[in-house]
Each structure stands twice: as C-alpha cells, then as structure tokens.
Image 1 (cartoon, one colour):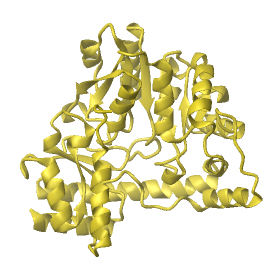
Image 2: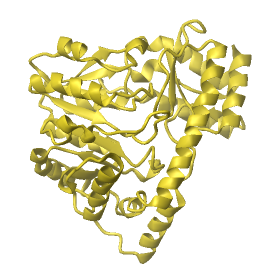
Image 3: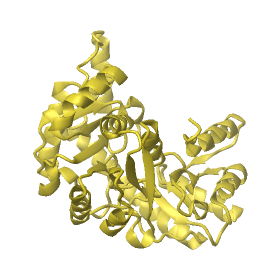
Image 4: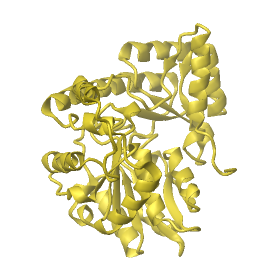
Length: 382
C-alpha cells in the first residue's frame, strides 16, 4: 500500500469543491469527464428497465445481448470481426484493466508503460505484485513508445506492453502501422500487448479506429483491448466498460469476474443497449464536433499565453502542455491557479516521473465561453 499513490487530480477536485462550497466560481478543466449529460435514449432505456423492478444479476461476463451489440458495433463501424464470446462486460474500463492484469501477471512480472501515461495503470500492475517499467516518451514522438524503446526496455521478466490510443494525458494516437510494429516487438519476445481504447470515437481530423481491425492483431492470442462507455458514450457514472480478450483467457477471466464483481451493473448494461442506436450515435457525433471546436478554440489561446504544446492532440479531450517558461513547478502552478484564478487544471505529477514538474494537463470538457473565460483568468494570474 505504501507504493500506491493517491490520484492527485481527485485531491485537486476536492479542493475545488471546497472553494465552490465557500461561494467561489471554479472553472473545471482538471477531470476527464465530459460535461454533457448521458444521451436521453440511454437514460430512457434505463428508466424503463428499472421501472419494471426486475433488477437481478447478469452472467459474470455480462449480458449476452450487450456482448453481441458490441461485436456488431466493431463490425459495422470498423469492419472488425470480433466474436461476442471474447467480449467481457466490466465495471468500467478500470475493471477491464484489473481483470486483464489479474489474469496475466505473476509476482515480479514487469509491464512496460509510456511515461507520461494514465496513472492508475502502474498502480494496478503493482496491486497484482507486478512492476511497472516506465518508457520516457516526449512530444517529438507524439508521446508514444517506439519499437526500439520497447526492445531496449525488455527483460527476462517483462510480461507485456500497455499503450493507449487516444492517450491520456496527451490526446495522441497510434496509427495502425505503429501498432503493428509494436505488436511485432512484443510478440517476438513472447509477450503481450494491451491496447487501451477508452477514448475511441473522440478523434478530430482523423477517423477513429481499433486495433481489432488490424489483420495481425484482430485475432492474435497475445492482444487485449480495453474500452469504455464513459467517454465517447458519455456514461461516466454508470461505470461500464468492456475487455476483448484472446479466447484462451476468457474462462480464466470469467472466474475472476465472478469473484471480484459477481456481475456488472444490470441497469447500466440495459441502458448501454441503446448506446449503439443510430439516434444515439447522431447525438454523440454532434458532441464530438463540439469537442473539436473547443480544442481549436483553446489551443491558440494557450500558446499565446506561453504554454508550449509540442504535439497537438488528435483525440480524447486533453491538451498536455509544457509550462517551463511560465513556472518552476507544475503542482505549485496548478495550486496557484485554483486559489487565485478559480481555474482547475491537473499537474503532470499524476502521469508519471518523466518531467512532470514541467507539464500540466488541461481538459476541454466545458463549453467554449467558459474556456475563454479561463484563458483570461490565467492571463491575469500570470
């Protein structure tokens, strides 16, 4: 437990709530949660189901109808043929990551992770007595690891590589070619590749994609893919995600899921059946275009203020910026902004140990008028 660090952005959010309770106006740009409500068709589906009162457990792997709906989504949107039997419905993407690591990690096994990266990954590895090995990635390589780096960090204890596309905190993508090269590096060594796609669908200027549509990866026995209903589908508080696992691991993961969770939330699963309907997708696509507008509004303003953005985000809803010319320490900088300007952003400390004091993550999860207001507040604070 001494190795498990707090999620610093949640600590910052707690301070923001305290200030709001005291009457301060806080512009939230710290937490990765869309400000849009859950689409109405999803809410209505949940309401109808709950009103019936028959809210019981589902199978540990999730509702068969939802697993089939996800498989159809992969086929219709990406041309990927994914057997429903390989799809495990989970308690959020966090549950999917937890199950994948629990099923694959022996004590002392090493997982390679890009740094900066999503903070929970390294702590989940540690929770199963594994060891997270950071691969330092920078703006020049779009904050994504290269095959040469993977091979340089590989050891006899390495179990696999975890990557994300779009990535948190940077919003950068891995192309199909890049994923294929990374998979070649891991498979040659007899290791695993875990691809986090929880921001899939939220891409700007480029079509969204999946590793499962790549011929070499789609049915590979050493590739896991994680996804979520939280981000693109706008269902953060419903806590629902999924894991696509190699067939050989499904039974083992089912046993773990039964013991860890019994089953995912039944109302959330029933609601999610409406997430793939054409009317819902239309709502979600309109929101994606709005996120693009927010990104395009905020990027030039931040650069004008002196934030250095070496690799523009093409996905998710984050900007990862270097503030070395503005402040000596990103944590102190973030605290100053929330206390004096009423603007909440996330210091780089949450995302790893590779130059975290020089970086902040800014989420454009609020509307453009508030973003521009935040820019003026930051300008005054600077």
